[in-house]
Image (cartoon, rainbow, N blue to C red):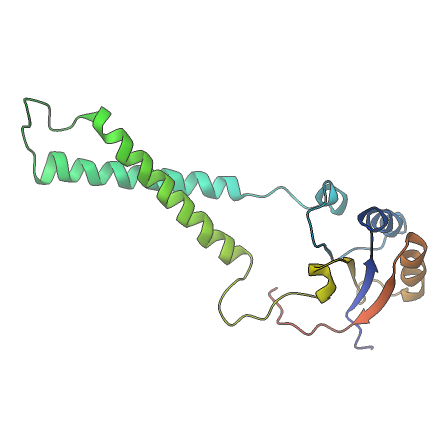
Length: 178
């Protein structure tokens, strides 16, 4: 069995890369991932990437912030140290709104940053997941798992027909996150 783990097609133009994706999918060749230096509209739908569940996480973090902010105000103003200030009630709900709102935003933002780092494996000491360094500069890369797709000559010809500048057979050199 060969050491080749990925076949990388390097494109200079995003439209040629999208054409390469179409050609590969028309021949039932599964694509591992695409690496681009900028966002490309519609690539997620073409690759079959499911919608993100980050809005659900943001809602949960925001709800937690609202509950914690309101609980803190209730505990300090009504339970632990109730004060009669100008004849106002000890639990004035309209006065709780600004602090509860700010704690909601704070916990939502901090929770989303933590979720982003966790989800993308951006921990200190982890090796980067970069298949080709030119993907961060000026190239558009299609990575195809060589072990799932055995017809390497067909993949090579399809990528070159679509306008690939270079086709490389790559061994994985980074730490696996799967």
